[in-house]
Length: 127
Image 1 (tube, helix red, strand yellow):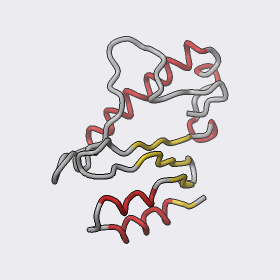
Image 2: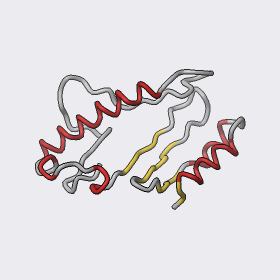
Image 3: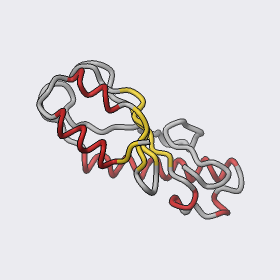
Image 4: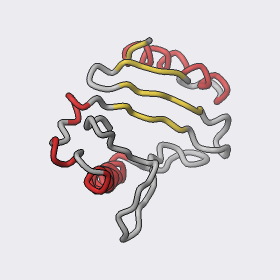
């Protein structure tokens, strides 16, 4: 498994090249405290957006045992993390260039706290 330094080096090498070259970054990366999985890389500025996931072990997430004890509590914890992460993305995201540039998005939940696939909390507290 490659690490984030390898990803950064690859991205620097791809800077200024066409979108097709970015497909080479798809895969799994060790980020130390979590694993980054790049599942799909956007083929052009107007194509389906790139998709990635972060897998965070329980030792890193530090979800309290009581918050992961039942399915209802895991759903609530995941909803809280989704809303918090979405708010953080808005501060880091910006549109520039053609297409959506550096727009970072994820599911925007409504008022209800529901089971969603955007953030999940496992019984062991991993996210």
